[in-house]
Length: 391
Ligand SMILES: Cc1ncc(COP(=O)(O)O)c(C=O)c1O
Image (cartoon, rainbow, N blue to C red; front, side):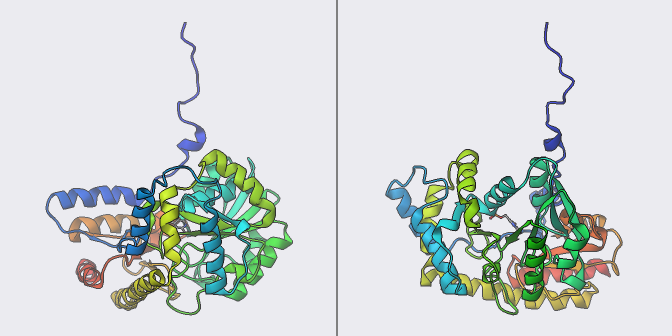
C-alpha cells in the first residue's frame, strides 16, 4: 500500500516566500513589447551599462588559461587581498584580508551572514521599506523578520531609538543598507555610530549592506568599517562594478566568525564563480575605476534630472536620495493605491515603475520606486508619459 502523507509537498518556509509583485508587471510589459509597444523601464534594479571592458577581458583570459576549477570556499587569496587594499586606498581603513570572504553576489554574503547568526525562532531587525529578499532569507532559516518602519525623519534608516523599541529577547541582529534600496538614502555617520553602539549594547550583531558603495552623489562615500571592525559588511561587484550577471560579491566579517563562515560557504556554495573572481581582479585597476566613476557621474546626472522632474509632477520626495539609483516617491497626492496605479500606468502609457508593496507594508500604497537605470532621453520620455497619465 502506498504510504500517505498529510504534509504538503512544499515546505512551510518555501510556501511563505513572497514573489516580487513587479514580476507580474514585467510579464505584462513583455507582452506589450511583443505587441510592438515601446515600454520605458524605470523598474530595473541593475545598471544599464555593460561590465567594464578590462574586467571582461580578464574573464576571457581566465577562461583561455583554463581557470575553470573551484577556488577556496572563501575566495581567491589575491582577490581577498585586492578587496582589503581597496578599503585602504579608498577609505583609509586597514582590513585584514583574512576577514574578507568572497561570495556569490551580495545575495550569497547575506545568506552566509544570516546562517552564521540566526537560529530557529530568533529574529532579525530590518527596515520597512527595505530590500525584500532579506525578509525571505530570514524566514527560510526558520527565523522571523522584526520589521522596523522607517520614515523620512530618520532618512528611511534605522536608528538607535529603534533598537530600544524593537529589540526583544529573540533578536540577534539588525540589518541596514546604505545607500538604501529602495530609498537611495545614506545613513548619516552620527546615526550609524549610535546604531552600532545600540546594537553592541544589547549584545547583537549589525549587518551593513554597502552594495551601492561607489554610487554616492551627494556627501562623502564612506564605509561603516571606518567606525567599527565588529560588523558584518556586505558588498558586491554587481552595482558600481557593473557585474550583476557574474554573481560575485564579498563580505568583511569579525575575525571570530571567519572559520564558521568558511565552513558554511563550503557547504552552501563550495565557492564563488572562479572565472568571475579572476575577472574581478581587474576591477581594482586605475583604468577600471575611471570607467566606473564616469558611470557614477552619469547616474548622478540622471538623478539630478529625475528628482526635480518628479517633484514638479506632484510626487513628494522628502529626503534627497544621495546614492544607489532609486527614488522612492510618495505618490499620495496622485493616488492612494500605488499598486493599481503602476498597472494602469503600464497599460495606458507603457511605463514600468515598482510599487511600494515590493519593499514592505509600511505606507506601501503611498509609495513608488523609480529606478534611473536608463539614459536621460528615456527618462525624459517616461516623465512626459507619466505627466500625461497624471493629467
Ligand atoms: C540592497 C541590496 N542588497 C543585495 C542585493 C543583491 O545583489 P547581488 O546578489 O547581485 O550582489 C541587492 C540587489 O538589488 C540589493 O539591492
